[in-house]
Amino acid sequence: MARHVFIADQLDDAAPGSTIQLDGAEGHHAAQVVRVRSGEELEIVDGRGRRVEARVIDVRRDAVSAQVMNVIDEPAPEPRLVVVQALAKGDRGERAVETLTEVGVDVIVPWSAAHSVSQWRGDKADRGVEKWRATARSSAKQARRSRVPDVLPLVATPQLRETVGSASLALLLDEGASTPIGQCPVPREGDVVLVVGPEGGLSDAERESLCAWGAMPVRLGPTVLRTSTAGTVAAGIVLAATDRWR
Image (tube, rainbow, N blue to C red):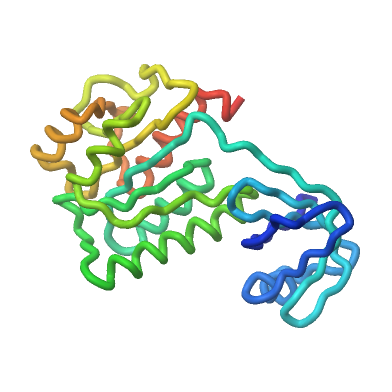
């Protein structure tokens, strides 16, 4: 059976034979929800590429102690996959973050597009970003990732200029495009940026700006996908063309 995965923010001093304690929310989850037992093997990651294989030596009400068996530092994958995800109504934004994390996306950029039904203003923007970050952290554990995707602060369209312009490849998902996404050669390094529009579609001004900054309009297929699923499907197509999935 696959080992359960937990997150600890500080694993810098982990070494074979040393002891790690999971406490707080993560310790409670391990002890009371997952119900790990002494002698059970588990994995602890720091969200930045370090994976520790350990064996449980003590379980208390809200804490678990484990002895380190092995430490693995996993290199950052190339190319880096960045998804600019337009805000979506209801819980569809969080659904997008969840599946983007599962598929292997490295950076998620919340985007306040012109036609986004949902708009984050003031404190709502901070709360929305934190909710997306919590979703990415939880989904990364489920997906057994050692790296939690970076969820960046909310941006408006003008702030995408640098993200798109500096990419090795930037693709704009557009149902009206003639080029299938599968026909685009994917670079071996650098950033691959996928721009996913809102339920209401892209405005003409957004399309014009993004293309002027270097984004290539591409289509996914014969059907129109929700904004909550389009990015995940596109990411899977891109990743399948890289060494990351080989």
